[in-house]
Image 1 (cartoon, rainbow, N blue to C red):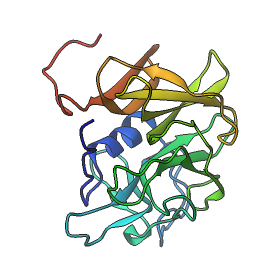
Image 2: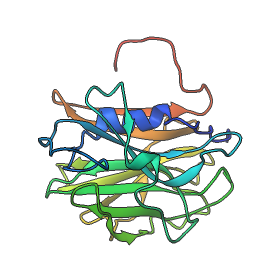
Image 3: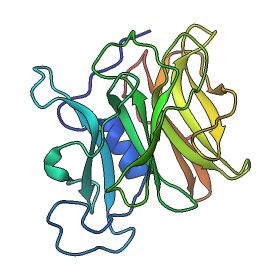
Length: 236
């Protein structure tokens, strides 16, 4: 399997996809230090990210937040310091993802990995609840599978047909290559048995679901064999 690409000191392309395309979130009052007034719900985008650089300068594997009103220009919150950091597992995170829950509030999930040790295998992910994206509570690490492999880049979406959330992530299953797996959950604590969500027959990572876009669901992913870019083509 190809080595997992490194994130840069600035948020990666995948983080922008997760925040801008799939996880439109509310900007809560006083989310940034010194905020002068509350803004209406749905008035901005919030992006979760970690920081990393080749030199190590500015590297931090906690959850960072930034805000934008146009999904192009972003302002780090909390002086670009982490708002919460994992206290178990690898002690750090990658690939944070924020989802507004149907019942209110937010869920934050992330890869259990600190640094770039791509050989580190964790069958769990980091999870927090948040009512307002200022406080983060009920930290836990649900166990997704028993395979001797990782659980990279978890994201979540609402599956209306099941009445549950789906958690998708990248793992190497019995096929010997990286596929997208899924577990279903109602509370992000207890999860169903893992199953293959998407396997095109070659290594893929970083799945991103956009659900209910004009009645259509879209799955974005990165091919580890051809890279992040492909020739322009009509949607299919």
